[in-house]
Length: 183
Image 1 (cartoon, rainbow, N blue to C red):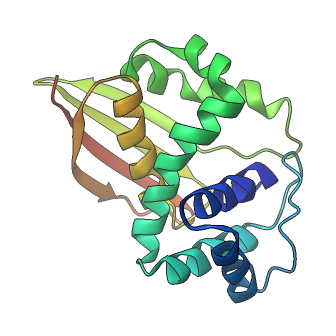
Image 2: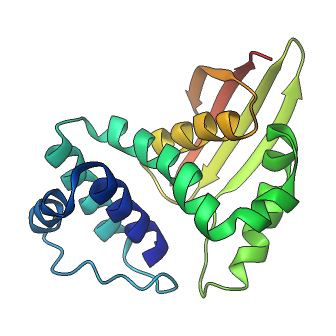
């Protein structure tokens, strides 16, 4: 993953709990430095070790930490670093999600060897939406749940996640999120 992800995780921990807790996270994860370069690619294992160590330091399970990180990503990192792109991607949650792959394509011109996830969105009847998340990475469903919750708040379109259906790809992740829009 890119340094911008690791930096965002650091920001979430330090803004909510201070530098001393981040130092504990680094030590527990066995990561010697937090001088991550935003545009540099780092082994995914570093990010996962940091997430597990953060969950331990914060006294929460990994899924809760990843969900909080997904919300932080939208509310802080996305707003700070990509707000103009996000605003041009859609004015509703559905429009944004339908254009998310194109946004990732645009961002991929900036990052070398960028391997973004794929999102497939279907608007269903009765205020329901289905979001399929497909990635070569595993273990990020809770992060995506957090992203969806924060995006619904950003677009002022309250929703709940009714179900998460894990499909069985040979490798990676293919998950369907069933959303109920409450607006």
